Length: 152
Image (tube, rainbow, N blue to C red):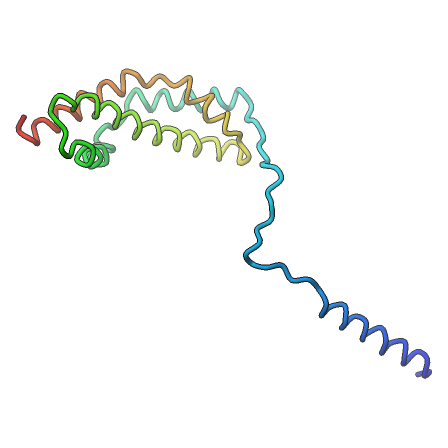
């Protein structure tokens, strides 16, 4: 090998080593700034299909599936409260618990349909889902159960 090629290779590798060692290491404490959330709106036909499925589920809804969770929440919220406050507390508890459940259910359907679904898609389906009668029935059921349990 010619001497000038040998020195060229040595200088080349030395420069690689030096620049590699001088690389800037980012701190683990530094979090990169998120510039944009990528959302892709779901087609309206898909949203309508999800809405139709959920409406069918709500018509034959298993109230007992949520009974224990709602009763647990009522125990916490009714602590030290008067009997007269029961209906309002039960209605609020049922609504908040079931709203969260249904929104999570909608998100599950949307994730299968469109992994980049927009948050507005969840609201589109939720706002068109009639829950008034279901919540009213659940409120009556949970209130009666709580009253019987407390001996009121």
